[in-house]
Image 1 (cartoon, rainbow, N blue to C red):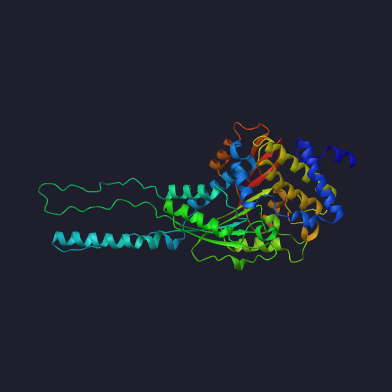
Image 2: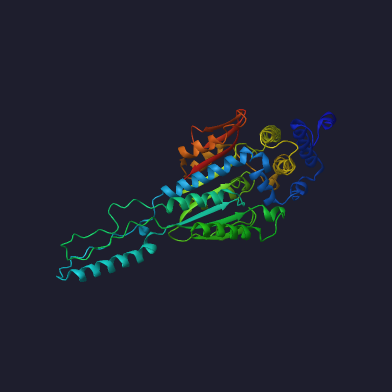
Amino acid sequence: MRKLRREASAEGDTLQRIVFHALAALDARSDGSAVAKWRQPLQAPLEEVMKMIGHASQYGAPLLIEFTYIAAVHEIARALIHASPPSDLLPKPPQQHDDQHSHQHQQHQQQQQQQQRHQEQRPQLQRRRFHIISLGFHAAPHWVNLFMRLAAHFSSSPTPSHPHHPIPSPDSTTPPIHHTPPSPPLMPHVRITGVDFGTLRFKEAPSGTVPVVGEYLGQVASRLGLPFSFHGVQTTPEEFSPGMVRVEQGEEVVVMATMSLMLFPDDSVLRSNPRHALLKWIKSLNPVTVLHVGLDVDTNGPFFLARVREKITKFSAFLESLDCSMPHSAPTRAACEEFFARDLMNSIACEGTNRWFRSERLSQWQERMERMGFESVPVGTETLVAVRQITEGRDKRFKVELDSRSGAAVLSWHGLPIIFVAGWR
């Protein structure tokens, strides 16, 4: 240990930094200060750290975060755009009247009134309502990109199959009927319920942070002409209950769990099995899709040495991957490292309910989700192409692969799986 301490440095090369953070976690475990240390707020506010990770100044976004955001946008948009709307929202064809009145002008007026009534009914019949439940909500740029994709799709107008204003023949006594061109699909109403699990636990942001994010997203949606509403929930995994999330009849639900399912312990920790209860509630919502972003590492097991070895290996991959997009001298580097180091601290130094980060490998999640009655939804071809494009021009040790069993997109570093994006329904 003394030899390792001589090699450790918070400002050295990548290996020295890894040793520094690993020793800090082991020291905290041995002196009993683990819980107090890993609950300490980050040097920079959490939302600021997420912006740093998302934008990373002039060095470009770290690939780990960029991979997550791009995959999330494409998969949520794909699920909502291609999902079949509820049957009660499908447009009803206008009724055909066989009017035998001899006066042609009166017939034309009746047709125009009928078309007007049909157009007035369209908003009530065709507007779809999307409800995205974000478990692990952050003010990430992917929300704006998602809004832009939905607005672009639902504002596109089909090509009319007939002229808008047909010109009557010179000998015709019948007034021309002005056909209404096909209308574009109505903009859907998008509702986001953002559940923030970290703010109250770490006291890193004021209680109004999540509503402020919702207000900003509302402004973005308004500029795009997208009906929008937002409900923010700030809680902890221990205090979370399904009653905090209101789901209305007729909503098409998408659940996005970003590094959050691992925050709920299973029956190996608590007999009540909060992880099982959460998944059971999600299943009861009958969601269009469940998008799961997780770390492909097992820190839920009981064996300490195996957990330490695996966690340090993955933490090393995180820091080495940061080197590709963020030099050691970058002003944002220390804040981003601290963000990942806190995960390392908790996984190594804490036990029982204090070990908050209990991630599992993708294969373990596959078995768990199948036991709960979910079936995997492979990521779309467009999503796979998009996330592979962001690796072009980056370090060749980054690879995006498709898991053969679940169809999930997996980002690996030097052959070591790091993070996955998986879909379930």
